Image (cartoon, rainbow, N blue to C red):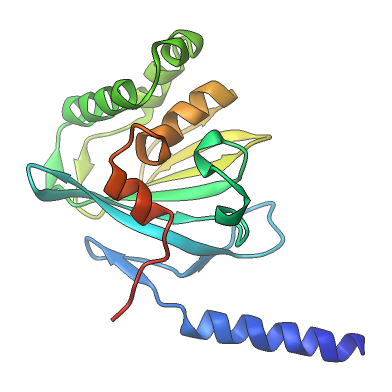
Length: 193
């Protein structure tokens, strides 16, 4: 009986994995499933969005999370682990413009109380970010217990603890003041033609 159940679950898993498709942001393929350190099961892609600047794709976002993440409530509250992969579409962008974008986005999507409570963690986050080039990735790995690990392809890495700060980071794309289209697309499975 147990073997039959295991075989059934394996068949379901393989059919889901076989039907899932990768997505592409600026020439970077985003896998339909990712393995995250410390997690027993691969996480599926739960959504993908483009962030535009002056109607031109600025960067793409892809979010992976445990399969139950979206059904268990508001993912922007920082109570669910997730991974957001950012891929730059901009051909090149100096560091000061990258920093300016994220500082403004953080301020637009967080409350004054949140900004007061985070101390200098926003500046530490911004210091990790380099100048951007097309196809470069930044991975945001979040765990409610461990905080946020930000990894820049070919560069810096930072660890950021504290629920207020991490809710602020997540709110840039998932919070109530985030761009509604981006928020909806990150929390909706991508459609494939």
